Length: 109
Image (cartoon, rainbow, N blue to C red; front, side, top):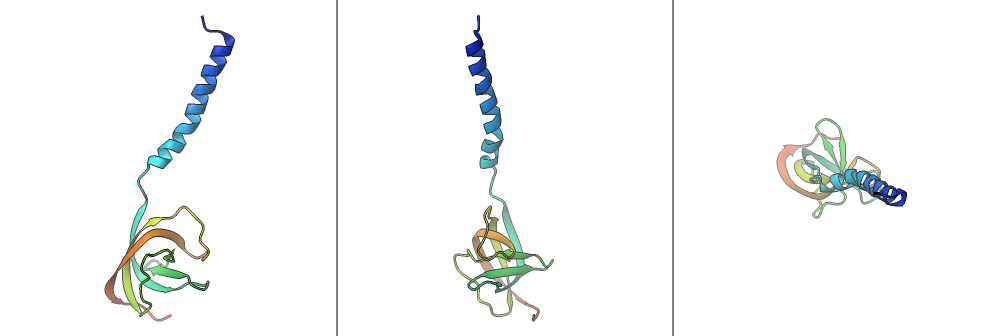
């Protein structure tokens, strides 16, 4: 026969596991990868770099391993949505950013 104490411990264990399950599932999710084409430009803050996509959305590329040149030419980036705030406070922060030139001309500001 199960005592009141044993039942209480069992219920607490089941509750703790039920609460941890969503967190474990979130950790197991694959990284949210993005591939976007647009024009790189300096960010509002010193040292920041952003990409303006064709739809006007901004992406923070400051964490790029190799920074693209600001030469008026378009690029295509591949990166992972970063679950963090950025010093730049401009656009969606991306991590693990790589890029390649597309050869397109960017509109002048």
